[in-house]
Length: 135
Image (cartoon, rainbow, N blue to C red):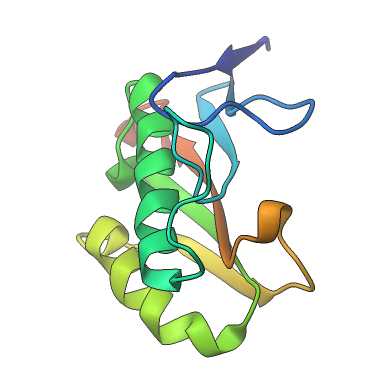
């Protein structure tokens, strides 16, 4: 099996030594996205978790699209929140992207801090190998 880096200018460049995503054996492993604007590299939302969540999901979808994938192919996500009190707000916006069909399996955890002071970060795993192998 070989691993291939997936990158796109439609999502922010990594803030550390990692790739936006890695494709390996039909699986796409997307790194966590925070609410950075891809063009400016600046944080979006000014602490508004709804605005941050929309940007995070926009970034994540851009990475999926760079691998010719869509949210419908995502099988697992992890949501990291700076404050679990934001759970319902994030859930509502999350459902706009992942609410149709079979929603991905998911974990949601509160963390002590996120990069650049973000209130939300989301990563995911998508299956790109074809439906017949999933059943």
